[in-house]
Length: 305
Image (cartoon, rainbow, N blue to C red):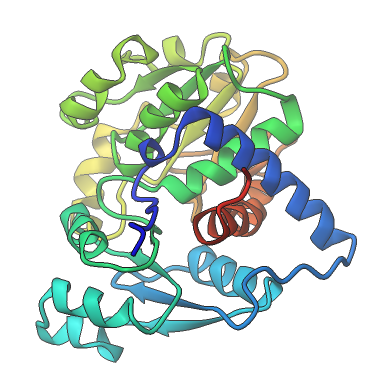
């Protein structure tokens, strides 16, 4: 039996595969908007394991499978033996004998790595505390649609060195852009992630230095899911890290703004920016559907070839 390809981080695909996947996502979007019926996963089933709740992730994967002619099963901790202490290895062995693809949204990254090592079918990381690679596919698709290749461009990450930041570090390596990370001390991305990126990513403390001349400015909430009790402490630490009109004015005049959502207007981003003309947050959210369809097609069918 062939070993399945998994997508646990952007590093699981080659830069060439990622570039082709983005182009395929753009093509699948065009086909869907033109009303073309394309069902490469007809009668196939996606198992969706959610230990963290989500709006965009669930809707985009379920819709994608439906458009591809397949179906999906939503599994929360209440619906599975995982929530009752069954070993991850056992759940992976059983679930992967019944479904054709598995998507997992959980906390510890080690959990999804263990699951994938015992799975007979492709496993997709739909978010862990360590990274969020599916969101980066959507972000890269959105940039390419609006501005062309992101290779050689400068991206500013403003805020927490969290799972999204880690994925942007990996994206800088894989897509060939320069990443400047502006975060307060004590909120840096994991050292190993940053070190592995070499010169592709650097930390600059001042958000103005990060935004200067940038082609893309990105942020995320100050307190991610599970960190709500830290909200007050984080609000103080990140007080000078809001993406607002003054910060965007330092970026390139053609710069785009992205946010993976949900957004807290008045905290990490001003309403004038996220609802303004440089924001592509809504296209970015929509593109979760199209880029994940391209990903599922690639993992299951082996295309784009």
